[in-house]
Amino acid sequence: MPKVTIVGAGQTGATTAHWIAERELADVVLVDVVEGMPQGKGLDLAQAMPIIGSDAQVLGANDYGPSAGSDLVIITAGLPRKPGMSRDDLLEANSKIVRAAVEQSLAVSPEAILVILTNPLDAMAYLAMKVGGLPRQRVIGQAGILDSARMRTFVAAELNVSVQNVHCYVLGGHGDEMVPLTRASNVAGVPLAEVLPADRLAAIVDRTRKGGGEIVGLLKTGSAFYAPSAALAQMAEAILLDRHLIVPASAYLEGEYGQRGIFFGVPTQLGRKGLEKIIEVRLSEEEAQALQVSAAKVREAIEALKF
Ligand code: TXD
Image (cartoon, rainbow, N blue to C red; front, side, top):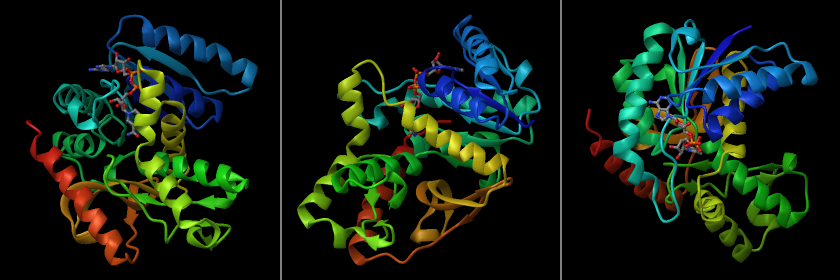
């Protein structure tokens, strides 16, 4: 069985371990700095496996020893937002945490692919690639699957259709300037604009952009974790099972979409080597402009990084 290390055994980390182990995608090692907590969650999850019928092994630790030889390292370690905070407010504190996580995990798993979740997402993925000295194929940030899933949920509820019939693509940085591509989004192949009145579509786009903040405002003590961890599990599956799956994710751009030197949400193809391809779709003038605004925000966060 492949091996996945999840750094950060908090809300998203532990729930990701749950999805991955339940689906028997890999053995899972949870690493966290809090004494006893990852061990306790690991043991609890391991004891759920006989009931679920999965032979995945789950284990928690405070050091990286047990994580040696991982195929995939998922980094969720870091502070989440509190109400009123933007994702960029987390930059300084989380930089140190992500840096340590990358160095220590690669020291024992030099071949691993890294998937980053920690916010501010695009800047943290950039930091991970630079600190690890890795090619862009091996570092991918999670944002787009989640943002697109939020939009899919809202559209499906509005039209009373199965979420499986709704396909949405949200690109750009993982901030409130993200860009829902309404032209490329559809319900069973029919463009959204043909099935939703313009004002309803605009309301859904707006709610999608603020989707993370909506949940932070409700939870008050943390941020969303069920949908973000489901997104991480989908990326893990695409990579470990070499699915060549096309999903929106944050990747390092080398000229695609007119951007160079930043991580940015784009349609990616994921498989055993990590990022296999960035897919370029034709954009309207308006979409291209919105992406420029979003890219400028991401660039600002990356320039603020000190490492
Ligand atoms: O779509 C996305 N990219 C996001 C991003 C969706 C959801 C959450 N997103 C971000 O992930 C969020 O803003 C945070 O920056 C991270 C983690 O969110 P989570 O909700 O899981 O936070 P928790 O529950 O506070 O868990 C973080 C854990 C906690 O147990 C800490 O003890 C641990 O990280 N931590 C560490 N683990 C290992 N090593 C170090 N250095 C470390 N520092 C803290």
